[in-house]
Image 1: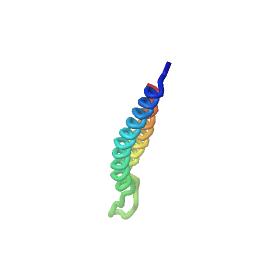
Image 2: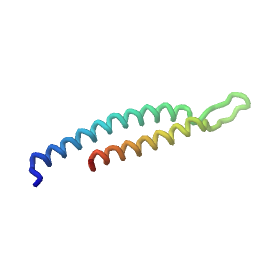
Image 3: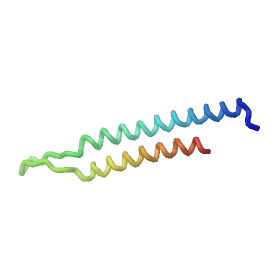
Image 4: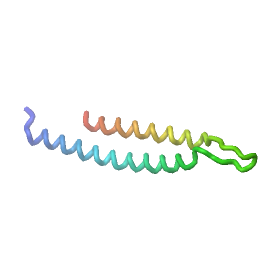
Length: 80
């Protein structure tokens, strides 16, 4: 039989893992987003036109994948 103490311990452990994953994943996402957003649109001086930096756009896609994996890891710590 599961006791209240064991249930609350598991809930606090899940909360601690969630906070740690949110901090680590959030820091990665913020740094990746800032560096990616700064370089998506490029201005080429000659001939004068604006182009898309595909490498930065790919980096932003990777940042969103990392965010999704961050959520998956948070929920997996809840299940385990």
